Each structure stands twice: as structure tokens, then as C-alpha cells.
Image (tube, rainbow, N blue to C red; front, side):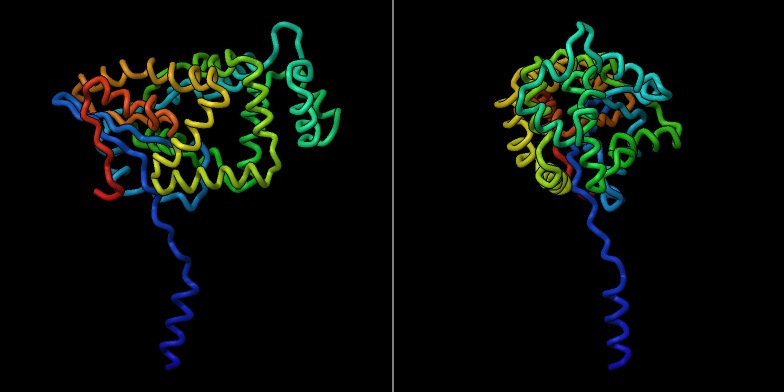
Length: 291
């Protein structure tokens, strides 16, 4: 009996290992080459690793890993300087002049003082949205350095695997910068919810991503963005997807296999790359969680 009790205590004292996330992973195959499409999330927790075997197999099979932006362009300080360049108003306006009274009140509450708001006055709302959202999820225990894209950038560098990008940093940031101020204001206002509410929303998105639930993610992310900020949705999702499609099709004409890692939003829904490739006649297969 004592031995049985000791074994039970030992068993319950051992940490329970979470199952790997179910990857949002699709495969497009042609005689010449194969393209794997992986829907990433840019901030994760240590418990989200290790990754599923099928995803590791796709990485091993690929001769090149392609990201939204090539890792080489993100190296050094050029990425931060380019963001700061586009983040600032160029016409003399200020943040306080461009956002609504409601958003301004939320920003003052979030930052804690008028002085802190004044310090942010030179930045456009989209920049504040990105920074405050990252700050909030980091406080909830998520880490940008653990994002799927960052993980495979580091792996590729270590393994000497070729990498590439679907767009430049200037192109990506330009989509934020071209978003109408009214929609930038809307996005900032939504981000400035209570920290507790924001964390609950992100926890729900993270849980859906872990389950590989493309339908749930589309229902929440795509529907909300299309209805509330339609121009931003067109710029950030639809137009970029359309620009990436010919590049992905070109990869299928090469003998090398590719793993394409992009934000999950770009793969799901009717405007996502998966449906768009199918509409162009390609056979796209969702891969199961295990080989």
C-alpha cells in the first residue's frame, strides 16, 4: 500500500505536458515542388512548445522558409527606425487632435496621466495600437520572441536553411500608415479596453489557435475586422494576400519545397490564401496534427 501511495504522489507531482498546438497547416503540391502554408501567431508561451510532429516534418522537408518579411531585413536596428519613420505624423497633426474624445479619455486612463499622453502626441493611432496591444499580451505572459515566425527564423539561421520574404518592411508598415484615421481611431479605442477584457479576448484567440480551429478564428477575426474596419481589412489582409498569391504560385513551379509562415488571418476565411488558391484551381490539403 505504501508503495502504491508513493507512486501516486510521484505521478501527481510530475508536471503534465500539454499536447502540442494543432497547426494551421496546409499543403499545396505540384509535380515540380510543394508549398506548406502555416498560420502563425506572433506571440506565444513556453507551453506552446514543442510543436506538432507534422509541422516539424514540413520544416524538415522545406529547402526554403518564407516569411511575411525576410529575416535579413529585420536584422539590426533598421526595422525599428523604419517603423518610427512611418509612425510619426508628417503634416503637423497630433494624436490628440486626430482621435475621438472617447479614445482620448481611454488613452489617458490607460497611460495614467496627461503628461504620458502628451509624450505620445507625435505618433499615429496605428502605432499606438500595435505597441499597446503587444504590451498588454506580454503582461499576460505571452512573449514575441516565442512567436512561430520568430521560432522558425531562429531555426533556419541555426540550420543554414534559405529564407525569404513575401513583402518588404516598408510595404507592410505602409498598409498600417494608409489606413483611414477614423479606422485607426476605432482600432486604438478597441485596444484600450480594460486589461482584463483584452487578455480574455486574446486568451480566447490563443485557445482557438492552439486547437487549430480555423472556423472559430475566422468568425471572430475576419468578421469583426470586415464589419468594423473594412478599409483596414482590405489593406492589411485582402490586398496583401493578392500580392502574395503569384509568389506562392511561382514557388510551386520550382523543384525546391517551401514552408510559408504568415499570420493566421492570411490563411483563413474566404479572402484567405487557402480559399484563394483553391479558387485558382490548386488542390490545397489541410494536414492533420500527426504524420
